[in-house]
Length: 80
Length: 80
Image (tube, rainbow over all chains, first blue to last red; front, side, top):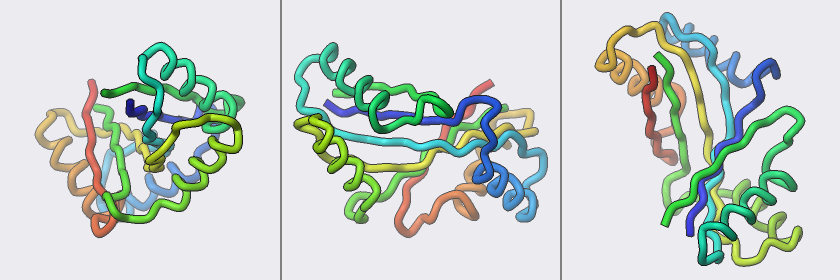
């Protein structure tokens, strides 16, 4: 089973990388671009056979390692 | 209009960050995890009013700045 995990900064947390992208887009002539935020995308394969245990496992991975829950939100979807 | 852009490494491109995550998950006791790949997720707001011009603009952003098309794939969805 495949999991696709999205990790994004919480609202209100400064995102200098996003700001740098926004400035670079402006410098390249893209106008009207705002609110750029950069997050992480993690894909992985799980050995878990059923969706409930896969969901539980990915939830624990996010809590324990993948996301810093003080400043980041996470969400994920399972496929296959 | 909001755009959500996913940038992932192409197949065959080494992903040391993904490998590090995979090893760390193993060390934490998550078994059966494989094929970990880390990508980027970029959210932004566009001034473009119609979907066709927004799609064209984001396509150009990806080609010119956001993705390194030699080693990365990108996909995006528009919302609102």
